[in-house]
Length: 309
Image (cartoon, rainbow, N blue to C red; front, side):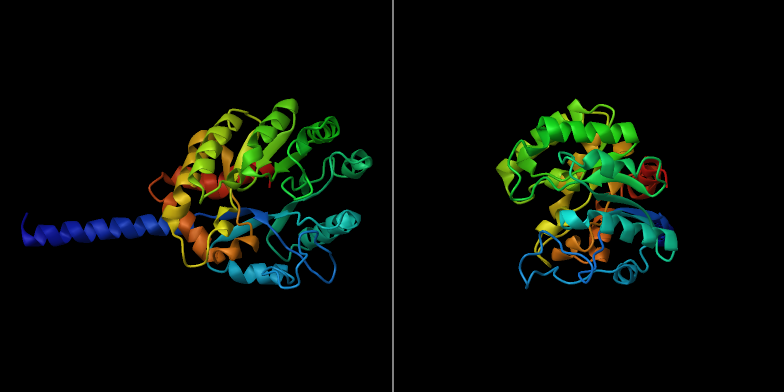
């Protein structure tokens, strides 16, 4: 190859690479896992230590700042485990925010206790709501033992969600994915979202292999989708890279397929390991060789379809 031909070919290659990066950057992003909390209004069950790194308010204005330049177009609020007596207050708070249209939050998954006596009355208010899309109760709390989500009462409450057209988010310890699989199987008419890739254990090789098998089995259930979210919070700031997260993310995408995965920031919890930009760009790096259509499904299209937003 002559020098002039080499330079022309190299220039074309660089231009093509730049165009590829530009296309990826232009993909709109729907954040399916946005946390917000105002500690002047709410008491969070898990914020017990005064020096907790997340122990301050995280408001819509704060979120707006960290997503600047990232092409976020919409977000779905995710409940923050408020005290049970404040569940309705949380609902009212997020509905007011959504209806104000001052921020990109357009829908919400709110707190609920499926096994509780008053659950049916509480969730009945959300039937047909254009804003409240689902319910979550964090299963991996210290007080909740293995088998917590497969009791008769819990299953009955989650079945009710399917009747009302509401989804249920599963946030569970990786060692209890078999419980999640049983719950999903018991409720075939309820749509489920597995949060944070089933909390894939990134830094324990033995547990990771078990997780791979369990999540693959769970993914065979057709009424569940998976959020590519959360796992960066396990990392120490500055001591990880895309290659740290890639094995879990690639396996999750492989077993669920491109039509059943959705991006979620898990902000501000993700900041335990990374900034919002670092997390988003790491995920973009991991999937950069996938087709533009596949990337759009992950970052935008699947969420829009699943939540009807």
